[in-house]
Image 1 (cartoon, one colour):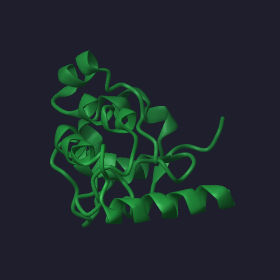
Image 2 (tube, helix red, strand yellow):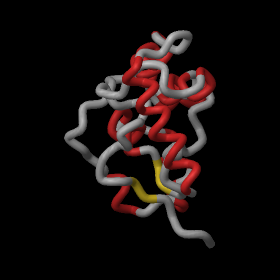
Image 3 (spheres, helix red, strand yellow):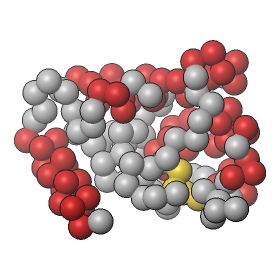
Image 4 (spheres, helix red, strand yellow):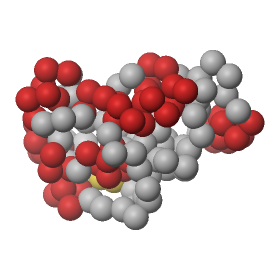
Length: 134
């Protein structure tokens, strides 16, 4: 079996769940995934929040912003795929400010998607440089 999923100590500097990440960094399709994990277990099931949400930058890592926003023990995906996750991940906490819900994070991310501001372009350029190196 492949290595189990873990989480980074803090959400990546471009994480769509972070409050300090500019709007419009990611594609709309990435932002539309976020609200599926909102609400209770039943809501997540109905909305399709059953897959683990992986980090956009670190292979095999869970999205730390996703864990911080929703709480690892409140996520249906974590319960369904517990066998594929390192046990300590269920105790995940961070001090990095994240949005209170996936819907809130998605609304922020989509706000400037048609015309991202200069700070969003800087984050996107940093991501492109990083991807070219890997």
